[in-house]
Image (cartoon, rainbow, N blue to C red; front, top):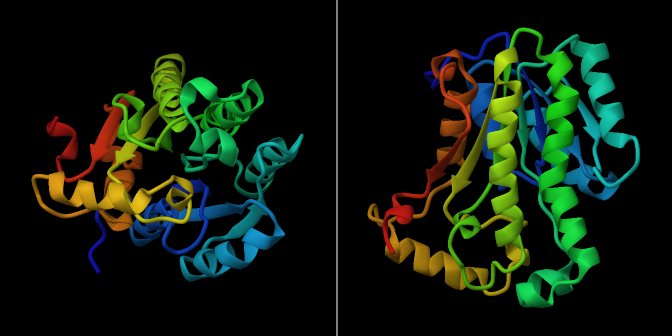
Length: 257
């Protein structure tokens, strides 16, 4: 199959593969097809059983644990990147979490603890990764995260993740501005609704999928492959002068009120 873009020789760290249907898996598939060298993470031993087959199929060179709430684990991951590769060319951050009670309730009812956890895992972890990646990207690089249009519009049942994703998008812009002089770019990819395991935690998500399919100009839901195609382009040299963007991959749904 013809590569979308040439990523041969580029080293990429994929954080957030949950299973073969996850957005991170779709991106990793595209990176692999384009010739990139990959490493991937798993949340814990239970999750490893789902991630390992995907990583093996895509030829990932190594797999490491990464729970951003565990002290020192993220730092240890980037130590491995330095020791194994000596540097890094791109990173995909595709993790998010909010406690169930806070996610399913009104935003105004969210607890300080729940809000803090959601911000830490879903947003601040991207800032931490950017800081740790900076010295490994001596020749420049690209940092990607995953967002959703519930960051800028009120989406029923998206609740607490709306403000959290808004913060993530703002963080991406600041990363792009602050690390730009080092040749490091940053983007937030904003897919339309996709039936992933992570999305299943959102109440009545199946209804959101149905509405999205009816509302998109192209009349179809996007796939993880669609997201992967954009991700591969953004980390490639073809996008070397593009940074600080929030890019929708939603079949045009963002065009409609």
